Length: 134
Image (cartoon, rainbow, N blue to C red):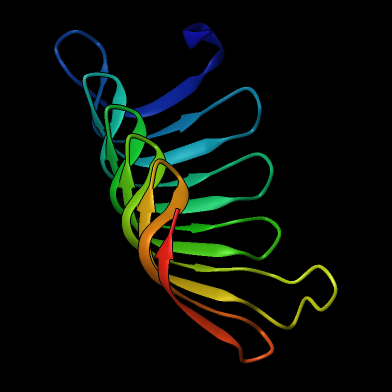
């Protein structure tokens, strides 16, 4: 519920978060950045309770535009977001469960949070797949 969150920062004439501020959620998530009409909007950094960190653009409370998401497991995505999902062009670095120091990398198109369209997947062992993903 809204009353469970703690907000510090600028407000508009309706008392909503607007401008720069910091919002803390009961689950430990913290967003610091720009707000518009009470929602994350513009540029900001969100530190999630499960140790993920997203830095980038927001629109109406969702990751939207360009951004970088570091996942708690060591994986990373840098690229375009649409309404909170990976969408457009981006790069994802995967961590191998068997060998955490070796990483696969996908560079290409995303649709609705999944690899979709043209891309290049480079595997930790050096193998490369280049082509269409769906």
